[in-house]
Length: 98
Image (cartoon, rainbow, N blue to C red; front, top):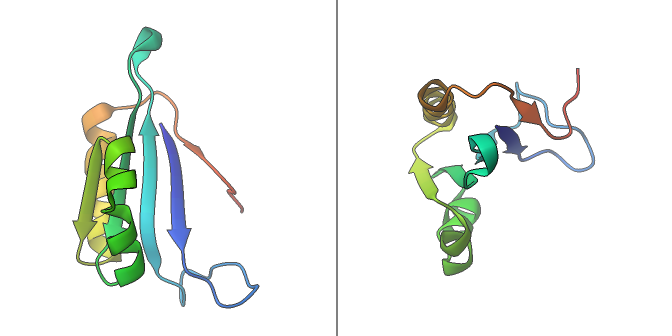
């Protein structure tokens, strides 16, 4: 399972979890033995630009699941449910920092 979490940052600074909200979580599930990959998006409704963008026909054509949630807490709760449901062997992230 590949994950990317998009947080709005201030200027050229790296996102700070105390100040900068998560607005979208992208994930890609790889099936066993060459089975189809499933891409999904969990977008936070509070970020109107992101919520509107991910429901566009372009995104809908590429994604198996697009979910709009009320807030960051609900986004992470839904991500945890997806991880528990699919039980991936490996979790990968992009631009991961300590």
